[in-house]
Image (cartoon, rainbow, N blue to C red):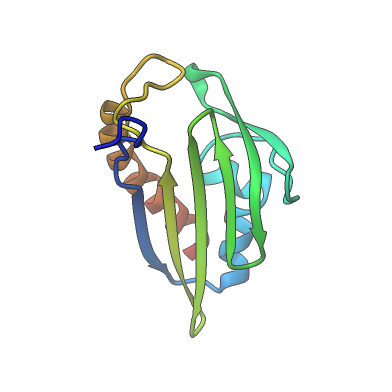
Length: 141
């Protein structure tokens, strides 16, 4: 085994079918107001390469950068120093299949706050379940 190989942990993936049209879901996941309503306050702009911050409460502001912008099907951005978040949307007869992918986990790394990726990944894996449920309430309202 090569020592340079990352000790990669699996991506966190949450997929659910939202009873809402794709444009409505896109507006909720690819605008500053939309993201703030179910995730975190932010100063996001839907522009490729745009640098913005997620306001992570006690953890301060996390720097982010838009890396993929393909309306209304995919938005991805770098989050903090190691992670990426991807939102994938698929239209399904007036409903939308939404997948959130939180990637960049490495068992050998620690976050900016000195916590191991292993520890944070377990906590966030559970946390995303509730966050995605919040999104579903907003768009299905």
